Every structure is written in structure tokens, then in C-alpha cells.
Image (cartoon, rainbow, N blue to C red; front, side, top):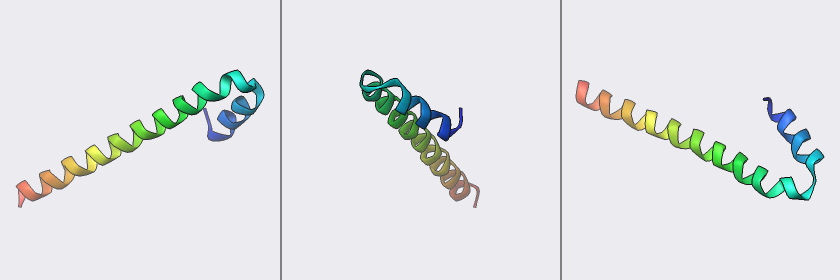
Length: 51
């Protein structure tokens, strides 16, 4: 789903949906960030070892 679709779903579902939708959104965002950081750190370590 695109980001705009998430916004429309979030606005359309009402108050009961908002809490877990926000948690799900921030959880997914944090998971993506952690994966990116992990990949960058592995890449940096590999570059240092490969020198």
C-alpha cells in the first residue's frame, strides 16, 4: 500500500482504529530503520575487514 492509502484508511476507520494503526505504522517504520542501520553496519564492517 502507498502512504496516501494508509492515510485514508487511518482517517476513515475512526478512533478505535487509530491507536493500533499508529503502533503498527511506527513499528513498521522502526523495523525498516533498524534493518537499514544493520545493513549499513554490516557493510561498513565488511569494508574494514576487506581492506
